[in-house]
Length: 323
Ligand code: ACO
Image (tube, rainbow, N blue to C red; front, side, top):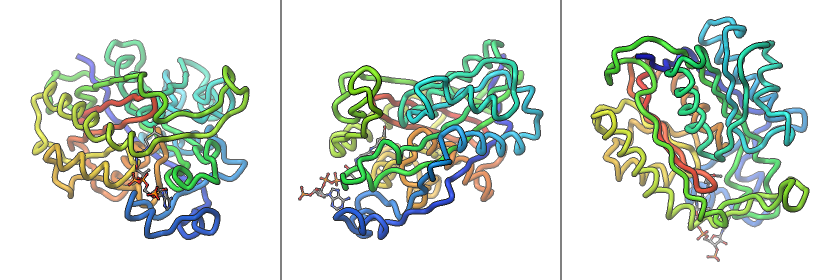
């Protein structure tokens, strides 16, 4: 049986940091309010030359170096993003081209903040069916370009960045102790469109549009839905919260993350938190957090790592990975 095994990871953040105090100079907000309600202290914001594909290429280069493999051996590139450089061609093809990869498949995947979990699940299907052998899975976003910078209820929440994983098909026994993606659980419920959406696009206004969100409604839905898919991932693999080494949730809000961990019985010290430094980087937040925890020595080979996210749609999901 084939398993999708993590060979390497990498991430990249834009050079400009914007603090809560910087935002308080533009809209009526405060460092205290933002920290208390979200846990966010700062976020990185892309300069005009730092497009989503530029960030994605830099993160991917680092992941490929970490994996110590020749980029030419990658035969699948998936980029999870809701902020592509252009409507088409896909950001994935721009990343593929930027890395000098000339063969295999490349496409974007759009599930907003759940995009990276969806992309890992999709790459896993390609790898475990033998349709691809080495996949580069990127989450890259420049949400700063979708923000209404006059709207304090949304502009304080988001940041820009990119992260990437290299996954490789390897033979395994099909046991929870084997390295690789053990399960993925994906869900969607399109009835919730009005709670989190962008008010533009080629089929509506013909402009890019701005992000609109009913924060309280998203919050209310988030905890219940993510704890369900995480519990289903434990159930599918015969594992429990005690077996878990690291919980790496989508980084939208510290309160959502801690409420979810508590409800699942996951100890707070197993939770990887980067929302304080990165803000909500949508599909990039999980690979950014994974890379941070790998770089500082927390996540090691053999560790059991749960990722989960919820995003616009709503879309949500989880994946359990033996690192
Ligand atoms: N600074 C100061 N005051 C603010 C700000 C701000 N930046 N934003 C809102 N307020 C005010 C509101 O106007 C309101 O004032 P009022 O009581 O006078 O009306 C008050 O603060 C409370 O606002 P609420 O919206 O009730 O605050 P809440 O505690 O719900 O926190 C927040 C808001 C942080 C947005 C929270 O609801 C949240 O995190 N929701 C989830 C959002 C999320 O995770 N979204 C991402 C999903 S992923 C994706 O797909 C993009």
